[in-house]
Each structure stands twice: as structure tokens, then as C-alpha cells.
Length: 115
Image (cartoon, rainbow, N blue to C red; front, side, top):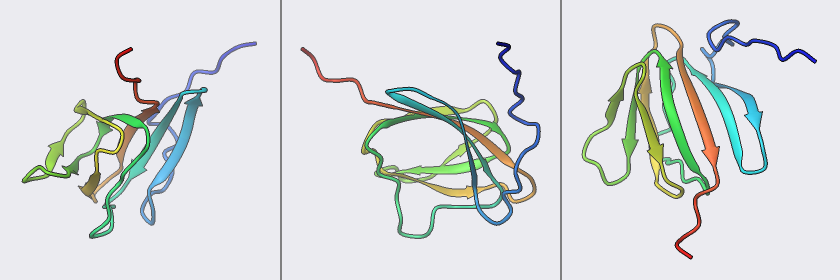
């Protein structure tokens, strides 16, 4: 069986109305998604508060990421990545409106404590 080659930038879904999530791979303890945004932001007053760790990299476009407790949003450019530990509240302040912003997000179970 031949494994197909996929291109993360080919056939991008239209995300002008809502962000588009494409599950690329998953296993017992992880989920890998491509997220396409075009001008979206987390609704005012809402925060993501996830039970798993998330490592995210911005591949194309631009975005503002706010992490609870920080004074300002972080501006992300292509190649920038960040690890968001489980339960670390965060929100997307903005994404570029002039074209698609493409993210790659890896969700995985947090490491257990010492022992």
C-alpha cells in the first residue's frame, strides 16, 4: 500500500466564514490538525481551556495569540511555534484577513508528574 503525499497548502478550504479544521493524523494520545483561518478571532470574553497540551506552529499568514496573564498578544509569523500546556488559557486575538492563515496543531496528553 502506497502512502499518499499530501501538501498542507494545496486545496485549502474556504475559511472566510469560519475556521476550517482538518484532522491529519491521530493516535491513542495525540491529534494532529491543520487549521485554516481568514480573519477569525476567538469571540470576546472566551478562552480556550483544553485538557491536553497543544503545540502549534504558524505556517502561513499571521495571527495574534493572547495567553492569560500576559499583558499583550504575541504576534505570530510563519515559522513561529508555541507550546500551550494543558489548562493554560489562551485565545486568538486576530488572524490576517487578506488571505489564509495556516496553522498546524498537535494536541497530546500532558506528561505525568515525577514518579
